Image (tube, rainbow, N blue to C red; front, side):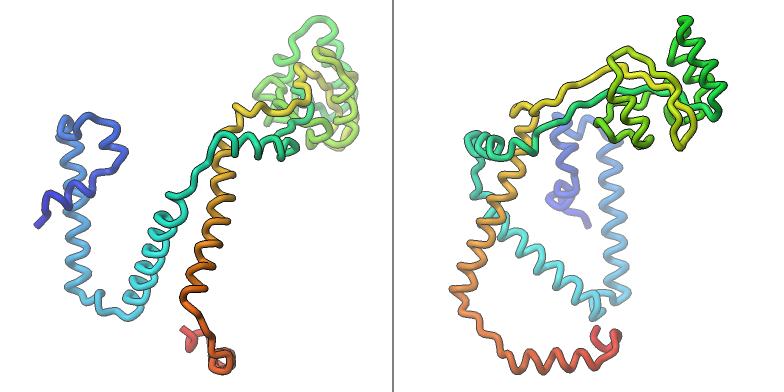
Length: 260
């Protein structure tokens, strides 16, 4: 038997938030109900098969229960009591500006050819007005970028992955300028810089959400450690070192199967 309160708990929160009422979609209700029926059938069969009495399963359920209880306590005593203000976020931003600096980026296109003669031929076509992207699509042997007209996207200076000589030439080009054929370990490359983004510090507004999460994580760590320390102090924990060492020595003499 499936009770109403149990059925309501099976309805995903996203479904509840996405619709005024799920009852507007009978097919959805039917699918949710079928899922719950299938789950109940599996649980019933597991119980009838005696899985509830399985020692290993009992251990797993006990560990799961402990983890769940500890997690709920952490939410209540730690996370729900944390407040992150905009001042907290701005303070973190100002103290960590180096994390939000972006180096200069260049947008690079290239045409890769295996021999110099072919590269000179393509350069001649470029100088006579043919489109770089069309020539890259037709002739470039670097298929990853040739499908995009030779476009490699934005890259950091010196980090193209095409070698030092490629990077040096690309860095020296002005926007819209096309290089002579450059010999690299991949072959001969004709390089074009199509755009440049100057180095900048990312504005606070662009990273505010990321910062808020980071500040929250830092506060959670501090509050958790403080809370855990208070529990330890109240509990007056004492470890029997002799017995502990004896148990460790005993475990070291067991096989992995025996330890479990």
